[in-house]
Amino acid sequence: AGVKPPVRCYRSPMNELFSQASIAAFLQVIMIDLMLAGDNAVVIGLAAAGLAPERRPRVILVGVLAATAMRIAFAFFAIQLLGIVGLLFAGGILLLWVAWKMWRELRGQGHADVGELSAPPKTFAQAAWQIVLADVSMSLDNVLAVAGAARDHLVALVFGLALSIVLMGFAAGLIARL
Image (tube, rainbow, N blue to C red; front, top):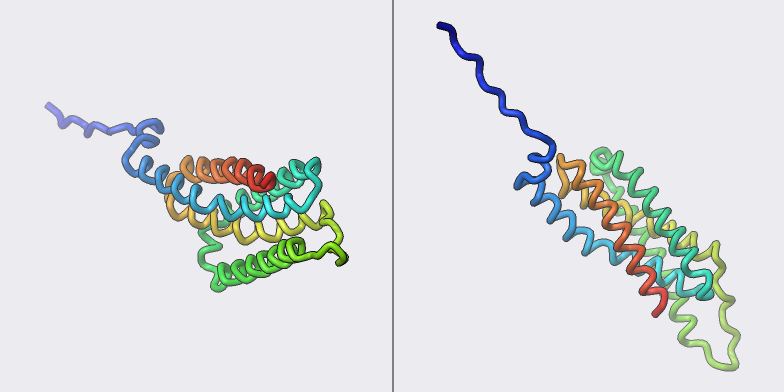
């Protein structure tokens, strides 16, 4: 009699999706998204708050679309981006500059006396440009964090990026109304 061939174990994609490693990756990605979606939302909301209420939804949409495009682009290159020395530092400097400009705007609006001339209202282009500049840095940190947590789980990576975009758009709308 002959030797029986070894039995091969087939793992379906559904089994892999519900493995302990996948569930752990999903939970880590969700926690990271909850923590990091707020910074994008604050920047988008503050930039939109400087516009007339009827223009806010449009600039929020521009900000969310820009963040989405950057996150998709960064996700393709996440591993290579981790190897670039000084990239996160440069992104942090860019973010500090954007935050400083927004702080100056907000401070200028709150300290104008009745007799003083106030700064002209922010244009749609100015608000959109502020959002895009801030999104470069914040999208990069979000993608790198999510990619690190998702590891080899592509579904968790895609889910995490989509969740962060939804959270960011929702929170930015709330902040802009404050």
